Image (cartoon, rainbow, N blue to C red; front, side, top):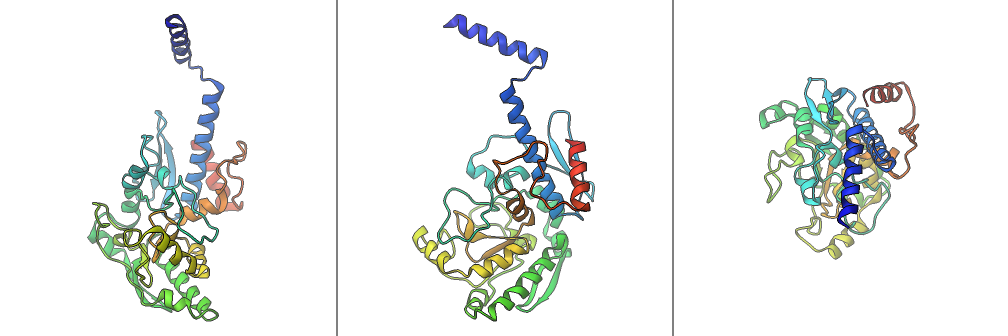
Length: 304
């Protein structure tokens, strides 16, 4: 047994010295790179005016280069528990769970797509402190009233469009108004309860619609949460998703009144929802190809 172990150790050592990688390892690295390319593409498409380039270091770390020249790490490559991926997420962590675009009728189990946030990215896009964030806020006039929201990355314009469309849908389904009004909250510089992390409301990129006592995972159990989700207007959810917002009702730790501007997550689900299917020659398969997408695909392939 000891002799067998020594032989295996020598083989592994030899492979490392000559730079040889077994085929399984090569395939795993290829899958990682192609998934990374997909994530980078949806980020660049979601934030075209904020992201200008990509950089890959010699030790394998990938960075987004923003228009303000800040470098944002894509993946810290640390092993993390599910809770750590929420508390200390990098960009790769935030895009790992596929957000379900299909309608649901009960609390989802085992995933919180969008609940983890890469704060270095949010700080660079929307502002890194209260003073900076508030300089980026604007009052957006909507058919649901005036709402303070961040104007960067088209967040405010997307909210305005979503609320206006929601009011149009409500004309044929009047009960939707009961789920919109009164709006419970927009911009609010605060931390998430029982954490030291800033709320997305602090960045001006989240809105809470009309509140119900069964809306939050800390208020009620999953049975009551599921009943609330089952009756929630699917048309309302779809309007927000079509405008780049994730719905907290699709989190295991449900937050049913909550909609948050995360366009990259919606794009990832829309175009790369089946993560198991990757054409290694055309890793971008699924994305509509136009001049903008083509230029970003070319850049990503050149850098990675």
